[in-house]
Image (cartoon, rainbow, N blue to C red; front, side, top):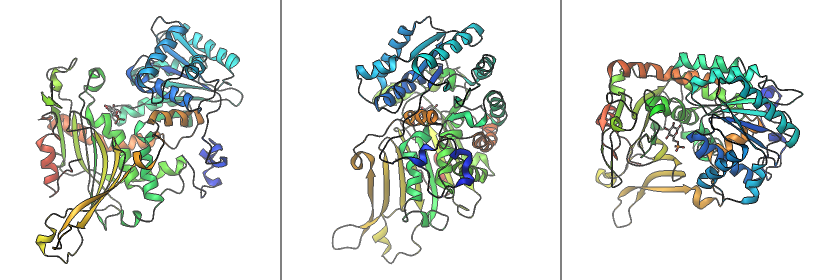
Length: 520
Ligand code: BG6
C-alpha cells in the first residue's frame, strides 16, 4: 500500500521490506523484481480459477518481470508442456484481461512442472534442481515463493520437506517466502499449532497470509474514504452512528466444495476472516501510516476490543438452506448436496451481533451476516446513522424518512451510496429517502484488478500491509470460538429457503434490538 509521508524511521521494520514504495513516482506502476513462485495444489479450484489467471493478468499488465518463473508441483504425470497447456486453458477460461499469444509465450518460458506427492523426498530434490535451473536460465536470482494452495493438514509435511531440502533458506541477499490461504486453523488452538509449523520453517516476516478480501479495491477504499476525507470521520462514531451492518451474501450453494465446507461452515469460512477484517477496517482508529506494522496495530486494537453478547442464543443466528427455487431454478438442500452427510449440522448462514468496547463505538452494535443461497450476491458495509434529534416537520411529512446511511458497496456493484432525506417535489413539505451514488464503473475508466492480482504482486514485492499477521488471526478466533462452541452444543442451524435472506431467527435476532436488516 502507499505509505503516508508521516511514516518515519521508527517504522523501519517493514520500511526495509519495500523501499520502492517510498521512492516511486506515483504515475509509474510497481513492478516485481526477479523471482519465481512454486505452487502446491496447482490442480485445485483456487489455482485454476483465480491464481493462474491472476499471474497471467499481472504478466499482461507488465507487472511481473519477463523472467518470472512458475513451478507447478503435483501428482499428475505431466511434462512441462502438459502443465503449460493446463495453464493456458485456465487463463483462457478465467483471466480478466484478454488472451494474447505473445504474453502467454513470455509466461510459458518460465513454466515448469515437478511431479510428486508431498511425502516424496525425491520430488523435493527435483524441485530444488528446477528452482536452481530457473535461477541459472531465467535469472530468478534465488528469490522463490512457495504458495500452499493445499488443505492445512498438508502444511506440516510440505513445510518439513521444504526445510529438509533447504528450499526455505535464502542465499546471498535473496528471499524465500511462503504464502498460506485461509482457513488458518479451525479455532484458536489449531491456528496456533498451524502457525508453529509454518514459523518453524519460515521467518514470521516471510509468511504471507491471504485473506483475499483485503486485495479488493473496494475494501482498500474503506481506508481512502475514512482517512482522506473531512466529510466522514467526524460523524464516524457513537455520537452519530446507530449501528453498522456488514453483509456478505452469496446466491450460490456450496457447489463441489463439500469436502472443504462441511464441518467448517459459514462462520469459520468467511466471518472469522473476511467479515472481521471488514469490521476492523470500518471500526479502527486512524493508523499512523499505512505501513504494515501501523495498520495491523490498529486492526488488532479494535479486534481486541470486540465484545460478545451475553446471551448468544438471542444475539446470534445460524441457518442451513433447504431445497427450493432460486432464480427460476430448482436447487437442492444443503443436506442433499454431493458429499454432505444427511445429518450434517454445518451452517450455511451465520449472523451475530458484536459490540466494540471503545469510546468511539460504545453502544453501537455491529451486526454481521453471511450465507449461501441468499437473495443475491452482495457484500456491503452499511453505517446506519441515528435519527436527527428533532424534526421540525409534521410527523406525516417524515413518515417515509428512514435513517441516514453510508453504504460501502464492496461487490458486485462497486461503489459507495449515501442515503438521506430529501423534499418530494410538490406543494407539500414531504420528506423521503433518496440516495447519492458513487460507482467505480462510471468514475474510473480502468477496470479494478482482481484481488489475487494485487496480493500476488504485493507478495512478490515483499509488501506486507494487506496480509494479516498471526495476532489478527488469533484475535479473530478468540471472537469466534465461544460462538461456534455454543452453537455446537446448543444451537443446530435453522432452515431457510433459497433466495431468501436467511432463517427467521436472523430476523428475530435483530428485531430484538428494535432494528431490521437492510434489503441490499
Ligand atoms: C472464500 C470462501 O473465501 O470466499 C467461499 O471460502 C466464498 O466460500 C468466497 O464463496 C467468496 O469470495 P468472493 O470474492 O466471490 O466474495
